[in-house]
Amino acid sequence: MNASPPLPRVLLLHGIWMRGITLRPLARRLALAGFAPEIIDYHSLMQPPEMAVARVLRALQTGEPAHLVGHSLGGLVALEAARQAHDAGIAVGRVLCLGTPLTGSAAARALGQHRLLRYGLGQSAAILQAERHALPSELEVGMIAGSRQLGLGQYFAHFSDSNDGTVAVAETRLPGLALHRVFPVSHNGLILSPEVAATAARFLAEAPVRP
Image 1: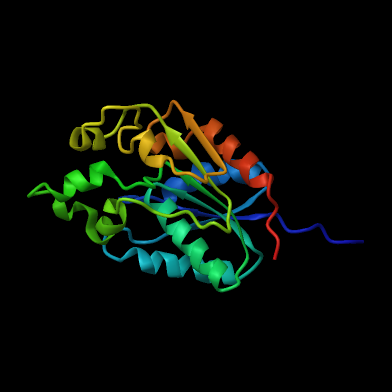
Image 2: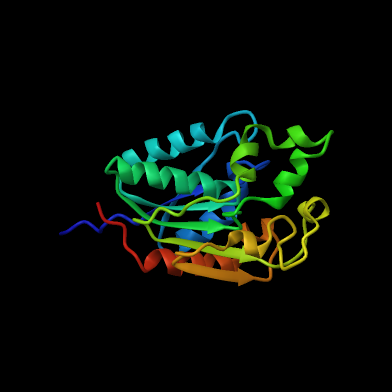
């Protein structure tokens, strides 16, 4: 009797000021959709993003190939890890970002100019304040953004267009995205929404991960 093939792996990465436990609702929904989610926990303030990237690369090297899903800062970590993995010949599936500021975060830049709050981004400041993050041309990258204006970031960035309270929808757009969807949820609501999880599952299921 042939053994059942392993469920497709999905590595989940949280955003700044958060920890892996916050991704459990999303992980649970992806598991129900037929995936094997694994949460990658890291220190977003005390350690540089490079250490989180290294943790993802180690996870990709052990076990079956995997998709990557990153919320906010986690999406930037996922993109860099996917780029390095591809260059090293390590198989990676699709990358899905949730509310990730691909053109840089206006809220993070505003915090950086605040005398008392400039250190609140810790060692993740530079990656969040960068003006543009290139998409790896060899991989398919999707984006799900939010448009419910609920979050402290709006008070620093003073958004003039659609945003999720922390990241503007315009900051999530770049040419070359395989998917861009906007849901009426807040920045943190992106990891709690059943609709976002269902869309994520469909996007990942369209491209099986192959060694």
